[in-house]
Every structure is written in structure tokens, then in C-alpha cells.
Length: 314
Image (tube, rainbow, N blue to C red; front, side, top):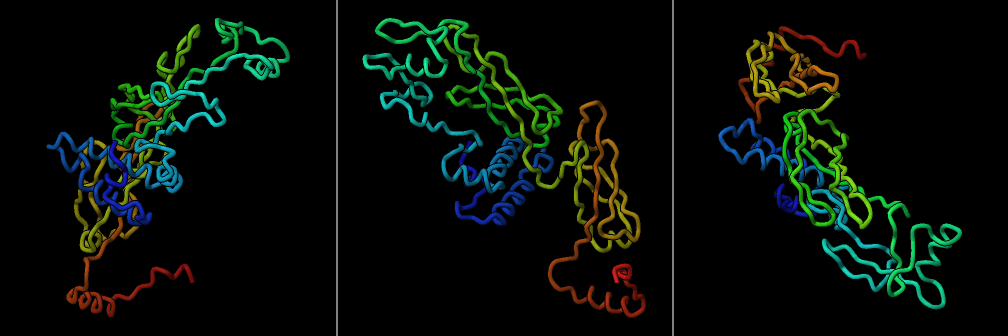
């Protein structure tokens, strides 16, 4: 994946507000619903979500700036602190450390003896004084854990994504439809390997990137719907985005800003079956700039129709 700063088109010193603004603008421009004839829109939209997942989170942004995680949010291997200075870089950038026994003590055997109170079980001297381990000796944790971020649409519909392991190996992983944030996917035998041991597993923890306008509330979704002053006063039919495509919603006459409408079955799949709902909240938006005609109309209307919506607050 490209540098997240490059993806969002912001400099490294950009403020959090500038990053948020850039993401919203680009997410609206490249959203798949607005680019149904462009097969590459989904990939661009996913890239934007992944970039925002890092730069939109202050802690993760600092980790990226320090080089602790890469552009996909995966940890960068930093080496083994305090390791044998004779260690050599192996495949994928890993250091290979060789422990040997030697005259005068202080070798690997002494370390194991101090840890286990005697001769280490499963360890025996090999050729040249190096220690070899038999199956059934010290247990090895060969599982690998990685994080993967998907867009809300990908979580609902399922997706196949490529994941890069710390070793440098890459795999295509099928994320099932209906995955939820925090869910862990286990791929048997795709972890690390060691002689005499079964390969470990790959554990993928899924997170869902913030959406440009939907907010997740359990199995429900929430969205703010901008409406004009005349739509709120006179009523109208307006188009509302859903994960399955835009639908029409009838706005009754005299609808106040903040009124919420419920669209049944337009939310997220529930783990036990069924689907959540979409809650649409109206937000009245006035035209940009000063409008003298609107001001004159409101002054005339105010003089003959005064009312106080804050009477309960005083």
C-alpha cells in the first residue's frame, strides 16, 4: 500500500482536522455508489479507508511516523533486543541467532539449567557443541498474529484481500461476509514452522475502518441526512444512501432538524440472523452565503409567526 499521507494528499505535518477533511472529501468522491461504472473505485475507496485508519488515529499515526508500523498498519520487525551480536539477518529481515555451549559456562545449557533447575528436557548436545531439540521438548509458540482493516462494505459483503506476514510472505485471505470488528480468523498451518513441530496458525484480527458517513451502532447504522429548508417545510422525497444502494425517503411537511426516521432491514447482518436497521437523522442546511430574499422572507414571517422552541429550557 502507498504511504497514507500520499493517499490522502496531505503533508506529514497536517493537523487532525485537515486529515479528516481530506478523507471525507476523497471518500465522497471515490465512494463505489458514486462510481458504479468504475471497477477501480472499490480499490481506491479501500485504500482511503486504510490510510484514514492510520492517520485518523493519533496513536497509530505516531507509530507510523516513528516507523513502528508500515502503511498497512502492520508492525515492523525491530529485531531481538539484547540478542547475540553474531546474529545474522535471515529471510524476511529476521535475525538468526546461534547459541552454543563453550568452556567456562555461560552457554545455552547454563541458561536452560538456571531456568528449569537442572538439565533441560528435550535438549541434547549436537555436533560441534550446538544444542538440538527433540519433539516434545520446550513448547514453541509458532502462531502468527496480524491485523487487517476492511471497509464497512467489505465487512458486509465479504472480500478477498492480500495480507503480508512479518516473514515477508504474502497470502490471499477470504474475509467472510458479515464479519464484525474484533473478529479473529484462523488459518491453519500458515504460521511459523520449526523442525520437529507442527506449523503454527495465522490469526487475523479484523477491524472496520471508519465510514465516510455511516456510523455503526451494534447491528444498526446511523446517518445524518442534509435537507434544505424548503424540503423540511414543504416536505419532499429525497434519496438516502444505504449499503445496498440509495433509496427514497418521504420527508413529511414541517420536519424539524434532528428528526430521526427508521429504515427497517437496511443495517448490518446480525450474528444470530436477521438484519439491523438504518436510522436517518435530518439536518437542515441553509444555502451558502447571504441570501437577501431569504432574509426578507424570514423577517416577514418572524413578525407574524413568533414562537420559542427553547421555552422548556428556561
